[in-house]
Image (cartoon, rainbow, N blue to C red; front, side, top):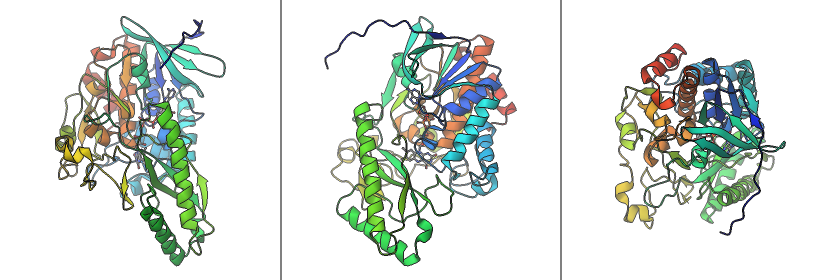
Length: 460
Ligand SMILES: Cc1cc2nc3c(=O)[nH]c(=O)nc-3n(C[C@H](O)[C@H](O)[C@H](O)COP(=O)(O)OP(=O)(O)OC[C@H]3O[C@@H](n4cnc5c(N)ncnc54)[C@H](O)[C@@H]3O)c2cc1C
C-alpha cells in the first residue's frame, strides 16, 4: 500500500492519572473500578458513548461462565457479582439466585449502561467517552502516553500504568507488543457474528411460531448463513415480548477495518432476512426488528503474548496456578473461522465438524481440540494466572478481557463475559497496586494481588 507522511502534531497532554484503562467492556469496566478502589487516580477511555463493550454495543448475552463447569457454585464474586446484582436490583437482570440455576445471567443492555455509568461515577473515575485509541508513546520502560482521537482533537493521556481493555489488544499492538491471532494453521480468528432483538413476540400463537420456524428452515436450505431457528431467547433481553437472537455469522478479522465494515453490512442484512422469513409466516406479521447492535460481535482477534500463555490443556485439566487471579469455567468453544453454519446449526471446530472439505480437518487435524475433552472437570474451573495479564517485555501495561495471553483453544473458553469481568477486576487491582506502590506490573508480588482480590470479595 502507498503511504504518505502526516504532519507532526503537537498534542495536549492529559495529566493526573495513575492508571489509564482503554476500553470499558467486560474486561475494562471492572478494571477501572478495581484500580480506583485501590486508591489510584483512574481515567477510563471508551470509543462508544456508553460502557459495557459487547454486552451493550454488541447486545451480547447472557453473561456466561458465572458458575463452575457444567453446574455448581459461583466462580465470580467481587465487582462482576456487584454489577450483576445492581442490574437485578433495577429489574434489568435476572436475580442472582435465579441466575445460579440458569446457564447464564440474562440482562438488558440498557440496564448495564445505567449501572456502569453509576459505578464509574461513584468510584470517581474520570471517563472519556467518544475517544478512540489510535497510538501510544513509549520510552525504554514501556508505555508513557496513550494517544486518543476525539471531537476536540487528539489527546495524549499520561499515566503510570495502562490497562488494555480493548478486547483486540489495540494498546499492545500500537506499542509493538508481540501478539498471536486465530488458529495456528492459518491465523484465522473465529467467525464474527451478532445478536439482534426482535419485538412483537407476544403476538405469536403457537401455530404462528411453528410456521415462522419452518420459514426460517426454508431460508437456510436456500443457503442463508444463519443458524438457530427456534425463536428462542439467547439472553440479552429479559423484556416481555422481546427475543435476543444469536443467528448471524461471517468469517473475518475484527482487527481489520475492511472486515469490520463488511461484518456490519452482512450481519444487519442477515438479521433483516431472518426477520422477513419469520414474519412471512401466517400470524407472525407483528414481529419487528427492535434493535441491531452498534458494533458487530467479535469473538477473537489479537492475543497479547504474556509471561504465560494459557493452553487448552490448562482449561480441560482445570489447572490451578500459584498466581491464579480469576476462574475460567467455560468450555473450549471454537466457532468456525470460515464462518460456516450447517443445516441451521452452530458450526463449531470443536463439536464434530462435518465440513469434510475443511482443510483443518484434512491437513491440520492435530491442531483441533479433542471433541471428547472440551470442558474443565465437572464442578471445577481453570485458574487464570496473573502472568497471562502481564506482557512478556513491554512495561507499564496490564492486559484484560478477551485479549489476554492464551492460545486459540484457551481463549475460546476465557472469552466469555463473566470470566472477562473477573479478569478485569484482577487486572485493575494489579494496575492500581502497581501505580500506587510505584512498581512495574511485572514486579508485583502475585500473593499481594491475590490477597487484595480476596479482601474485595473476588473468588480466586
Ligand atoms: C456473536 C457473539 C456471541 C457471544 N455470545 C456470548 C454469550 O452468550 N455470553 C458471553 O458471556 N459471551 C459471549 N460472547 C463473547 C463476549 O461477548 C466477549 O468475548 C466479551 O465481551 C469480551 O470482553 P472485552 O471487554 O474483552 O471486549 P469487548 O466486549 O469487545 O469490549 C472492548 C471495549 O473496548 C472498546 N474499544 C475497543 N477498541 C477501542 C479503541 N481503540 N479505543 C477506545 N475504545 C476501544 C470497545 O468499544 C468496547 O467497549 C459472544 C461474542 C460474540 C461475538
